[in-house]
Image 1 (spheres, rainbow, N blue to C red):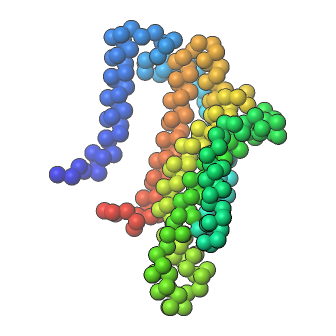
Image 2 (tube, rainbow, N blue to C red):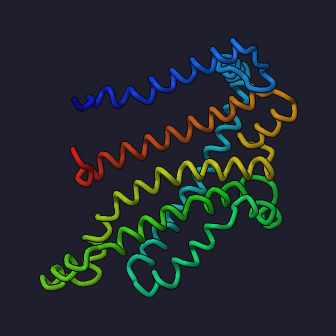
Length: 253
């Protein structure tokens, strides 16, 4: 018997509750110090105690991530369209972009600090650098894998190359696009946090370093929880948009 849609929606929440309960029980049973591995109750207490400070740093991380992610969407879509619409561009640019993506983005942070100074600039650019590649790859793949037979039929019916790309290729790439957004947004938060840990005096990354230096491990874990919550919220937003805009591409819709 197939599970109901309600059960599928509740499954992640039930699993999270079970993990938190097990975590709390083990910390209490083994008497683990909160300086080593804080329990969920200690993390929640830190979230409440430092709610104002956490909210301030979380807002900084959120808006810098969104700016970098927005730039990544624009650049990723444009490059993906360029690469996917031309076999020559695909053969020339794709290997170079793959080599660029293999570079550790954290290594760019000191360079970005020299160029833009301490602050939001390095965080925005790190979020962009780490998140545009999945978008570019998925858009280019969606366009480049358009069936030759379908394209031939459309040409016979009088469609131009631009008609095939804009009226068939781009709509066909939408499922790839939303799939890439769900991956890229989580990477963008990672990029922002890594940059803030070394090149900022605000943001969750800075909070993690400060809390660790002060041996406030519950506060550090609270920062991690906030990052995870923001990434999960954005993931669910894109999943909702994907369901309502590309439902035709999913089985059982």
